[in-house]
Image (cartoon, rainbow, N blue to C red; front, top):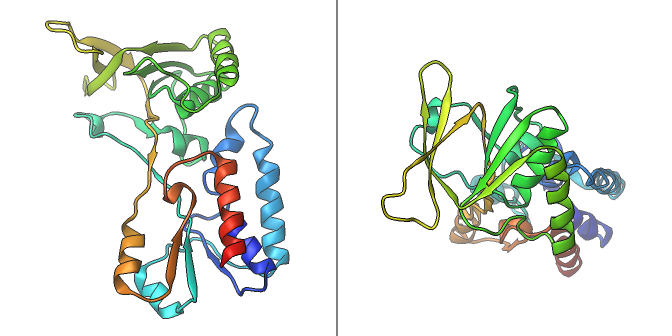
Length: 260
């Protein structure tokens, strides 16, 4: 939205395409996170000024190379975000699971009393707090010892303290290798200690709903197709280049909107 807004303010005729039914992208997920509700103000601000500056917004519209060729714009700015990383755990298709990102965006929900969260980066920890405040207790596991992703040390310490007070169980040194369904609706997560030790027994952890929070990765196929067919210059920004903090992405949008 920031790139569209700035470009429109500079006199460009701008069309903004969004494949979902509302603007905001990953910022919508941040709004759901405790103590990050102020991101809702940023989304509202951008929506108001996008409208005031005459940006043509098309929701529920996924851009294709054919559409781009037909529209024939002077410049294309791709800010299509990134998609959740979902490892193909054996047995996953037989269990109840979702991603942290769909959960925080309101596209899915946890209806069970407990959740088993795979990934203890920022998304995993914030999802555990989100669920705890809604009455669902969580176990969060991570293979490596570092937790909290890119959180600064103070923010990380405060968040971990809140999770402790809410009864969230955060475990490191646990590598998930597969999941099993008993056939009666009971899910068992099979894991092993990390680093791997010879003859270490498998860990069997009960789970009602599995939540995957293993980060994001951009799907650059659209950019590759657009560049291959020729035509207008294509600029890629934000999470579509590499997942980053929200305000970094907004700043990048401002810069490209000012540049084109």
